[in-house]
Image 1 (cartoon, helix red, strand yellow):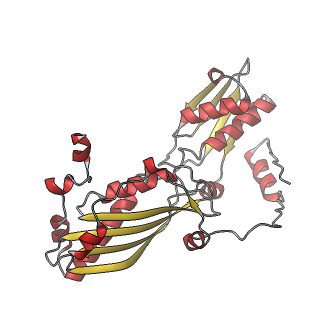
Image 2: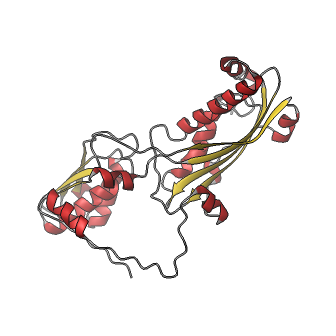
Length: 305
């Protein structure tokens, strides 16, 4: 049995006391053990599906590219941890009822149009009855979707009580509920010549998406597109979104692009270390040419279409 209980207090202090003294009982009967790590998700085949339109295309044949290499790095591994948002203002909202079932909602949101739409649905009123005003005290992606539950709860309470209601999430709760950047486990195999030219790269990327997919499906394409800033010769990959029993991860400043750039530079530095060459010389050897750009690497392919 599941029952939702809402508490509305006269002050923030009273609300905090009520929250700390609340007792929540969970029925764990017939519930499987939680999936908390990427490895556990793989063992239990717990993945989200990625639509084909959101999945990037492979470039050339990896087996052919790796056969041309003088040197190989096989199944090297790196891990990218999560990062938490630390915007100055936490998730917050203020809802003020108006006449004729109208309402003004001040929300610290990066996506006010979605909040506007969902608040109207939850209150059962036309969208033109809801006015959403955005005041964002820092966001970086953390207030794109995660601000919506706060503004909706605030609006519902104000609608029921017919009086203004304000929600200000404390820092601890904010960091728990917002989720942060996606942790990843990356396994890569790369082939390269003594001349510093990389001939093939294969990536196996496991992304911890948390309990729901939210914005996670955009990551594979963003990661691979960022990697394509270099000419890897043949580029193949297998990207999986792991479903775990953790708070869902969300978009954080340059989602996917940042991780892709980090992965690319880590591989370049690994290659330069094994060849005992300056890392910039390896970078310069693997920048794109007009020929490589024609292999579905960049905008030139789109231009031709």
